[in-house]
Length: 93
Image: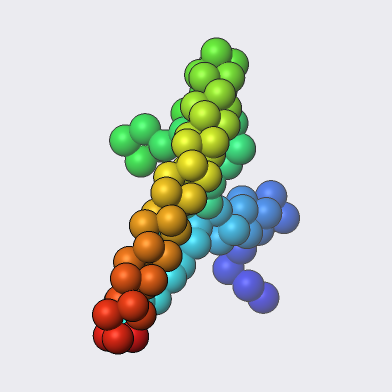
């Protein structure tokens, strides 16, 4: 028989296994981190519930950031295209 005493102990152990994410990098080093939870933030290694105002501010900030990211990406693409055109005109590429 297994060393787990009760079914609740089994569930608790299973929940702990699900909460951790283990990754291995290219050199074979293992890293463990906690699984992200929606509506919570990581403070000193523990998940703390975010206030509704903080969630709202984060949501607004991410929307604004995504809008800015699109414009910045377009600017980068224009400059890259311009540089490639110059290179092709010079016979470099």
